[in-house]
Length: 171
Image (cartoon, rainbow, N blue to C red):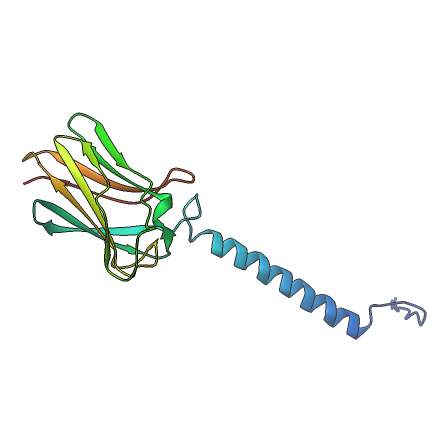
């Protein structure tokens, strides 16, 4: 027995123009969703970008050069020094750059914290733009104890996320 399929002339379908518009709309929506997902993977929980910190030597202490991927205003950054032997730490905050007048201007020292002896912080905003940007550096001076471990943390004050950190054992 042969089966025949009847073709109905009154069957309705989507016109080719409407079908094309629907396919384009679906493609755009999918592309937007993927873009938002991928963009979200590049940031820390607080939305700030990560900072690489390179430690070098300076007279009486250390220079920490920053390599960020995004500028953050210095006013929104705290610098924390931790002394791991006694779990003590000190924090420099409110790193205002209001007095900067040009590139490479040193921000005045930001006070003393007592962590295994007094430590002093100087910040250099190399570009003078008031933001943490590539090449900016911190100099921390003071007394250091041989064989003890220290950690420097840059923290985003708005939500407390760590932007970058480095640690070392004093030779």
